[in-house]
Image (cartoon, rainbow, N blue to C red):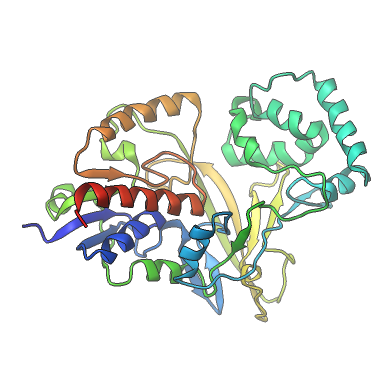
Length: 372
């Protein structure tokens, strides 16, 4: 008899939600993580009274009340609303693209005039069916917005020309003809009071956890410890890169403590000029309405991914999606292993999407393997 019913590889949101559900029905779970902390990329570092978003900004948002109630059952969330700013040259612009942005750029206050302005620019660009990110962006907001607020930022983020990037990437960006700086349209939005670690701790309460353990380096040992495995790591690494490595983009973070109570007046400020090497600056205290006499900022630098770096963003172009499909076919043949989460699914997930995916999958897993 193995010591555990389920081994969960990875203590991020997907693995933690899975572990919580299994513990609720009395199953023996072991969660392992190669990092020195639990929580995956939502992990917060607490420094001098400020909860730092260690791996970049994480703002929870959802329109699903059940998901909102679920996370709030572990920790109450504050009322933070994501309203990022963008800097280009000496000017500051509101994001997402809305009437404030259009007024700042063109001095127009009439939504109909803005629509006409965009339509004229799209017509001059001669785009009927967008084939890449550049064409998709121009078809949505015109050439001026594209040149000032999209092109440089996006090419820094992805390390490639916008003409070489798939159109779907830009479809995530909202465009509004109202004076509304709320980045998300979702009904619920906020940050856990006290930081995301409280959410992770709640999900993993009563679950055995081992840190600094690499499943891929100790595969035989850990595989023998449980009847089933939930794997949330890179799917190509699981299969020893049999078909070749999947592509990712990575990030580098540069942190600075400042002897001022307010550096930029906002939690997130994007820098859209390509000549500026970082994409944005986070001022962490503003996620929690902090009143400390000092502040801590993080500059976020995109970089090419290579082994040893964190794989943050999957490059979901045609070639990589075809490669992933080959790995997914292998995964679908597994009988004791569940694959899920951002790296195993090779898909960019928002936090609410990860949680919803894990909750659906764990219910299916329980129904299949345990008669309750």
